[in-house]
Length: 213
Length: 373
Image 1 (spheres, helix red, strand yellow):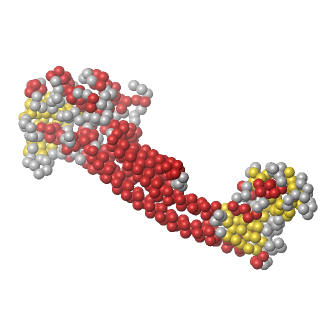
Image 2 (tube, one colour):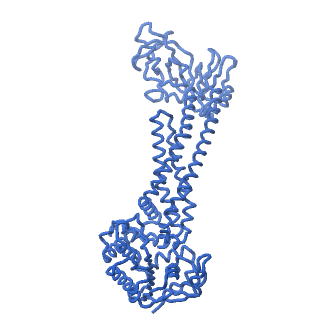
Image 3 (cartoon, one colour):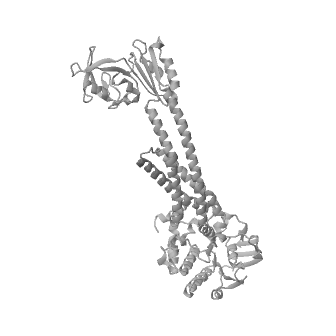
């Protein structure tokens, strides 16, 4: 299997704090689901932000399909985030003022994709994850589990080759968790590299590999 | 998929749509922005706008007194004739020009021993501006002002007048609108003379384009009168009135502009501070957008759009509301151009005030913003 996501000699520290990563390296292959685990405060979420090009490492390389993205200008990194990555944040991070459908299609603007093209796919995803009836609701009117599934719909809308998820089952009941994990595995089966930060042993068991920090 | 869906939306349209949707979604921030810009505009209109309107009213009052008029009166036999119009034709600074001959007593042909009304021959390319119906004067016909019609005993412009010295009757075919420039000639009954007919002139009326033109044009008029004895003509100008106008305009204008700048500057600082706070309140929103792939430029564009839309509505409401309030109170209302310029300026000021917080928002890292509770 090829490794679309490669990290080499990653070094990172927040200002005035000890290094979270010092020469850390890893590969995530296409079709692989990797669980990142470890105690709180060890930098699991920070690693996800580094892999997702939201933070710049102090040193080292974060390669996407062989290209070192750490050195790219900000606009190019933003473009890659919009087109090549899908993100599921820990608390879903939905816009409370917009509808569920607007939230799912939000990143279409950043990709330069017409809403008219994105909306039918968004409806299909909402249907698949059992939240289609909430398409016109606001995030404040839905449960935490529904919010996480909607965040997953947003992440999957453009079939990203890299999917990064931060505690995607943290607030979910077992049935919802199973739905989310199935979706992550399905995305990997379609050829994406999937990285999941989690404390959930059940989720870890369904991943191909575990990386402990 | 609809036909519209096949058309790729331009980025600008997409940003405007997203900015509008976000502005509507974040109602509290939008309403605050709208209210402060409306308040800024209302404050300006109710203070400096009122001053500007008062200045315009004062100037209009002065102008109505004839600040642009030059009147030349010539004694009988002075030698001033209608060729003076040819010499003044094309002079820059002259807006309106006409010459009138000596008064010839006439009476209503239908009234025996009727009241005498002076008939004057008239020359000038601009006479048709005064006639009703508005058309080029017809040779051999007369136009009468309402005052002249009343004096003649004609209920309307239909009938004829006969010179007291004899001669053919002249039909009265229309009315004459007499404004400030010809008020001194009332009751006015004119008999337009065909082009090329030279005759004696008793009164020459020159209206300049601007009050400032009165002095130079009056000097020029004096040089082209071409009369043997200058003592037989008198030139009356509104130069003093024009000077007064300039002083009033300068003092009130300076005061009004100063007040506008002061109020705008004070309001602008307030708007900038509040907008900075509003943008900071939205930083989690901008952090999420950055994380999902929005570029810094797009974040700046969205912040400015989210500011400009409610600011424009607020500026329109503030200007219109304050103008309405002034009208209801019976105070002078600033001109529409002033209100429009103020609304545009206030919107631009709000957008300008949002630039710094917009750039700040675009440069914050998503990790920090997404961790804001």
